[in-house]
Length: 341
Image (cartoon, rainbow, N blue to C red; front, side, top):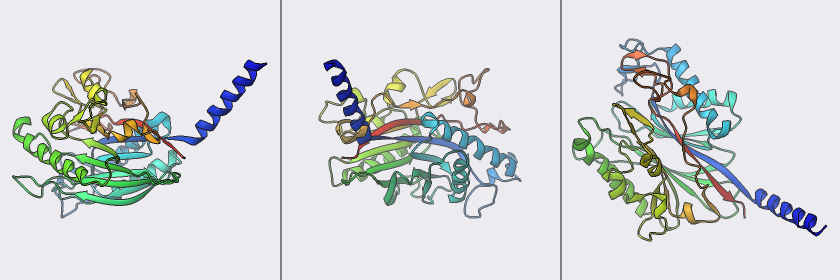
C-alpha cells in the first residue's frame, strides 16, 4: 500500500513539473535562392527570371515553395519549428507565400521578420516565429563593413523575442547570419568572414546582461574549426562548459568532429550551418537547451539516393540542370525548454 501511495505521489509531482515546463524548437536553413519570378530593377536577379538560362518560372517557383513547406512542416517531429532562421531569401513576398503554404499543413501562426539587405543579388536573412509562443520586442539589422566593399554583403539580423507565457521577462536574442562566401578561395575570402565575426562579437559585447539568452544561427560559410568561429568568436564545444573564459558554445562542433555536415562540396561534408549558444542557455534552470537535441535534419526524401552525390541533398538545380529539389543545404535544429514559474 505504501509503495502504491509513493508511486501516485511521484506521478503527481511529475505531472506538476510537466505542466510547469514547455519546449520550443529552433531551426536554421539555407533554402538556396528562394526567388520570385519578377524582375526587380534594384537587384541583380536575372538568374531567376523566366527569360534566364534557368528558365525560372511560376511552376518551378510553386514546386520550390511546396518542397520547402514539406521539410519545414516535418521538422520537430512533424510539428514544425517555433523559430526558423532562413537564409537566401529574396524578399518579403516570397516569405508570405511560404507562410501561406505552411499554414495549409501546420496550424502554427507564423509571423515574419525580414529586412532588405545591401546584397546586390537581393538575398537576405529572415526569421519566422510562432506568434502564439513569442512576441517580437525589437529587430536590428547589423551591417558588416568589408575592406574591399562596404555594401556588398547581408545584414546580420538580430531579433529580440519575448516568451509570452513567462511571467518574468526572459528574452531570447536570435542572430541570423549569412556570412560572406568563399568565392575567390577560402584563404583569400577569410578576412571577410573574420570581419563578420568581429561585427557579431562587438554587438554581443554591448548587451547589458551577462546572462543574456543568445542563439546564433545561420550559414557562416566557415566551419566550427575555422578561425572566424573558434578564434574570433571563441565558440567552443559544449564539453568545455566549465571553462570560465568561454561564453559561447557551438552545438555543431561535435557533428563536425564526427565527419558530418550540412553542405556537400567536392566529395566532402562541410558544417557551414551552425547553432551557437550563450553559456546561460546551457546553465540556466529556467530556460535552456535540451541536452543532445541538436540535429542535422535530413529526411530520406531530401537525400540523393545514389551516384556521385549519394547522401547529399537534392538541390533545386545541379549547375544549370533543373532537378526540382529542396536546397543544397540540410537544415539544423534543436529543442529548448522554458519554465513558467
